[in-house]
Image (cartoon, rainbow, N blue to C red; front, side):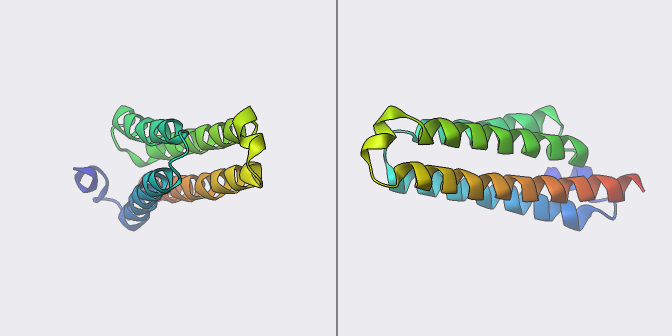
Length: 126
């Protein structure tokens, strides 16, 4: 389904790489949320849901997916800041740092996906 809409252009490899990074980031987010089991996982599942809804809204086209991933990265960053500054986190040593580190790494992965989608949209337009 995704390949059929974008595979005709020369940006197919960038598009597929963008999808792969987004899928891996989603799976890693689910895995780390399950492993942590600290009650804040629902917000991170909503980040993944936003990525899926944004993909459908953009009809899985590269340019729309790039903007979707930028929005998801912003959402990930905002959620991580909210988690790091939550009063319950202050009781656990280094929890704020870990929440910000987690958010920073995953936001960077979402932005890598956005860059790959952006590259795919530029190659397709050329």
